[in-house]
Length: 284
Image (cartoon, rainbow, N blue to C red):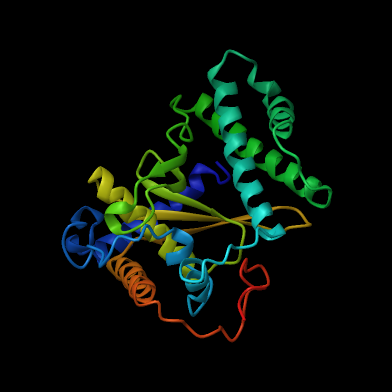
């Protein structure tokens, strides 16, 4: 995992206290998908990027759904996808390496080398991506080393990467992809961006979709921010309590989007647009 276990445990302690002080309204659990307010007004298969859009007016969704504009796959989107894939591949290769009888002392060089064989990395970002892979491997090695002198349990092993979940019960896509889930039912989302309220709505959507399918409570999330592009990778974590208020925010965002799409109402242009918006050249 890109963060040490002690950091995650420290964050979870804070979240436990918040849950005790502000219990979740059970009517807002994802397993109540068949009754209001969790039940969607329509089933449109919305993506997480649509519900948690960076566009303040949601015009990007209108362009995609109503005018059928095809979004541009720009360099920022390609890089974000590459980094997600690199992290997941690194974790999986390391997991296989440790599960075999290979000498763990060789893992650093061997895993980094094997991961790099799977990707074509743009030259201007190659050094940064390689440093990120090394960072993840070092964190995983530290976890394994600690467990070898502790109780013998690798705390990172219960992490499940690239989890697919059906969000259709909540009016979302059938093919949601969650970056990871820990053994203690914490949703993990990697972001190559600055912190945003949209990220909290996105991780809430993932949590409620899991609740709808598994019928177990998902109360916590971790957003792992990976930044420092063109320099040394900087990794930070934001712990999220999937509170009643966040659940209401997700439901409101989803239902407002459903109303806009069904009515085909054209939203206004945003006063400021992200330079990485894939609809930037189409939004006239």
